[in-house]
Length: 118
Length: 114
Image (cartoon, rainbow over all chains, first blue to last red):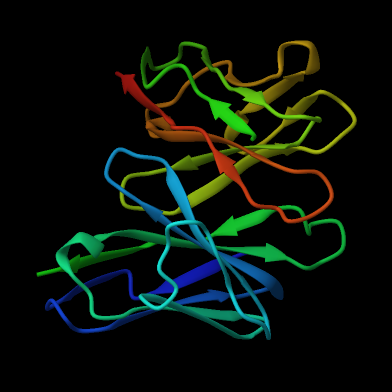
């Protein structure tokens, strides 16, 4: 149980285009999802917290207009990188917090999306 | 502010040898504690977690971790390492009671020699 998927796993796009990444909890409901960014050989940096039915909460220094987050259902959150530039190239990982009683304090992670902006 | 320290950036062990990965945290109160493992190009898999109770917790893949309040530590151990354990290991903490924003350590890269 507690499986989280991400799609796509890998995407290459041209500079200036927008890219949408989906994060789905497959076998549980997630009232809260998190989006992280990971640079090579580095730890995970929390970008934003996504709550179902409300606006996302962004961490300091993360541009909300550039990284659009939508959490329209209890099993789906999307991250859209708008007007992508080469410096946005990174590994993006989502996690979902299981709303099930007794498991609500644990985050389960997706497999990640490798974004390369040319 | 809370912080997590993993003092060892790289560790190399021989297959079959024992393993201990160190994790120290700085926090106002005992937080929730986690160990995750990441294989190259993959997401994170939860190995084990500590919320309360028995300070020695068992996880998947034969891993265990011991919470020591006096040392603010949560070290990960495995008695006999397998070549497939080679990966990046992250210690993480989250505040009690809500929010659940994880703070990660910088990770320890484990290499296993055959």
